[in-house]
Image (cartoon, rainbow, N blue to C red; front, top):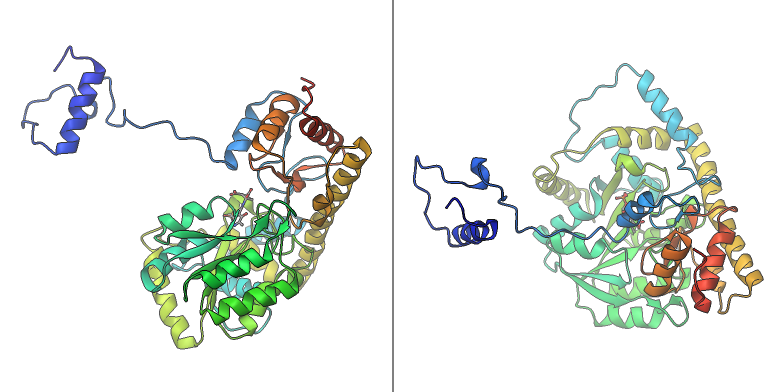
Length: 435
Ligand code: PLA
């Protein structure tokens, strides 16, 4: 085989691997990637994968040397100075953990730190609720449903957080769409949503964003939630809440739990995936929880036992540090009170960014109705800008955001808003860039 081109070697190898032919002779080492004497690789055929649509925006941002650059891609909170924020309560909880010499680095139980699971369920459900908690959230929930739920198909809003469309099918639960966002009103397509849920099969799983819908920032009103709940319950569907922004929508943890609590209050079952990335600023700690609300303790206990069988071959057991930080904050009255203050400050700063951006666009006379910037809820504004306009703003103004026109309001500051308004104005008017 020596002297052949890499392409020919690859073709031969591919054919060999494909057909499973027994061409290798024992004792004879031919040039071959795994023998260390050939230039090609057994992975030669692998294509360069595209960057992630959300996290890839940060990769592009980091490469840009411009001092003007602004990253409005990922939904991560920033201070007025544009810096990441570690909450004071998190620092305090970490200091306590560090000083506590009884802490060790043992493996955690498969379903994680028990105290954290309990407190986390309480946070979303309200005190004194009986619920089972696990950890690993959406993916664990998906695999559990694929294995143990008779109707493993999940209806997700259009649009939804892009990763939902990957997590569920890879976890064995195919995804179907339901109407959610109406581009004309930049609000909720309530009737479309209700019609789709009515048309969806009895028993189907329905993914609901508990609050601060990502990417649209459009949430149902309390009255609309009531209508949604009635349809889902009457069709015996199974709600699966994704709750990644509790406290970030209204500034109040309880207010933002309203939708979930209304479904739990009716006595029906549901799944809840929680994330502490945003509301505790614990992004890199990868801390979240899965709660499955069951009709009885006996069922909950059997569900718990099966969740362990899902988790053990996936990641064995979760890391401890994030859970211990969150549990410290959730269990300590003073830390909890301080947390709500810090959380409210983050939510308020985001709301103030909405007002400033709206006022600045108004002052520029930018054509269009920008009231959705004020109306939309939570971390994101779904601007309505199209991919060409987004690319223009990145190219000419070094503004980084996802191609769907979503901007993370938390990435803005009083300083950067005029620059963003200039960019939006130029994009809307179809102007040449400033570069
Ligand atoms: N669910 C929703 C609706 C989210 O928006 C996100 C994060 C998650 C789950 C994941 O939370 P985790 O970090 O605890 O796993 N969405 C981000 C980041 C903030 C991302 O895409 O991963 C976003 O920019 O959309």
